[in-house]
Amino acid sequence: MQNADFEKIVETYGDMVYRIALTHIMDKSSAEDIFQEAFLRLVKNIGRIKDEEHLKFWLIRTTINLSKNANSRLRSTAADTDRAAETGDDFSQSDLRIIIGDLPQKFREVMILCCLEGYTADEAARILGKPSGTIKSRLFKARQLLKKEME
Image (tube, rainbow, N blue to C red; front, side, top):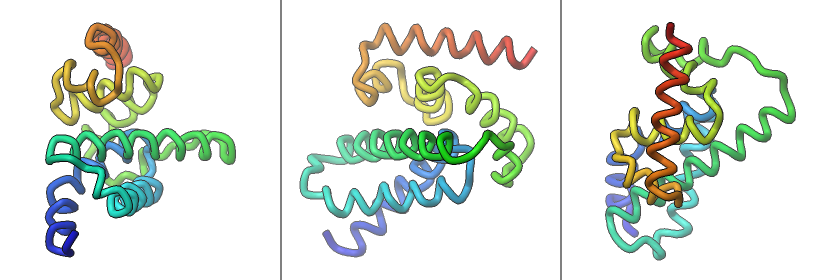
């Protein structure tokens, strides 16, 4: 892969990778680390990527997995703190991230993919390796939880 190709990939998918990481981890510094790690892994695995769609799904899945690992490390080494203040985003985006960040992991993933990244339930099901019905059910439940939380 040439530098220009890699730069185009980072330009195209960088914001998405960072948003997914930040929404999962709720910490700018950790999200930046995940961003870097995801693209480092891409460099090592680029030969396995079949096409543009596979590349996008691979980046999403890798970012989610790295975020889960980072969350586990953070939970085991530190008490919960209010990381939302560190995001520096406007109030409404911060509030949304905090509320989504408080959801259980299985609901958080679905909300990130379907509501923040714009995937359909069927596309999210393929990305997460779950049945479409499971994703639709989780999305419905996540929306109920968010509605309850916002009231």
